[in-house]
Length: 229
Figure 1: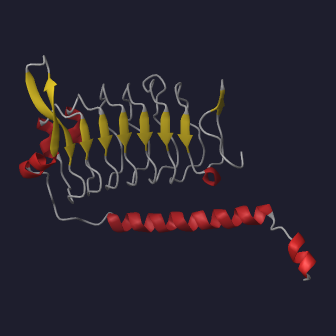
Figure 2 (figure 1 turned 45 degrees about the vertical axis):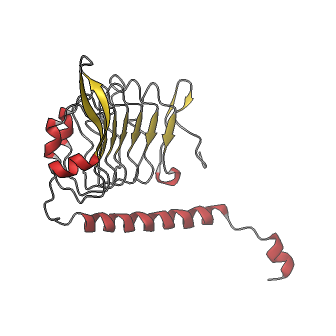
Figure 3 (figure 1 turned 90 degrees about the vertical axis):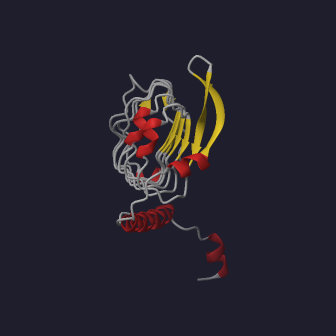
């Protein structure tokens, strides 16, 4: 091939996209293998009173304003497998339990004043919780979550589910998720955007080449512009 041929040569776009798809498929397979490794049994490490005391902060008024309580808790990277103790800390509003080995968040159902939750990097298979009336921000990134069922918090504005194992979006009820404006789903293996029909959604983050369908509603495309669509 001559120098002129090299200068004029442009790689076929289909070939480039195929290479990108193969690369992302390999990355997904690596991620699944990592998830299998993370699912191994861990030594039981329950949340203790001492850990709680270390992680509590932000003293605020509660109830009628005559009492005070700490409303923020950070217990990340503690190898926790159990947060049962949180059932009693009903005044918590901000909770960070990320980078542990949690498989169950049900004790958080008792925290009815919760505003902000971060549970990234655990071993969760579901983001399901009881309806929390004041929850506005929830992040469950980099777990092993396989569906979007059980998320029905009326004031939830931002939901992060990136880096999980979700193939289909189900259970996101537009009659309940009236405030959801940002939905992060990158790093999953989505087959379509069916199931995403949320009235206030402004920011939808997906991995383009893994999505075979695209939803349009009145007012335009749901979410941000994506290359190739």
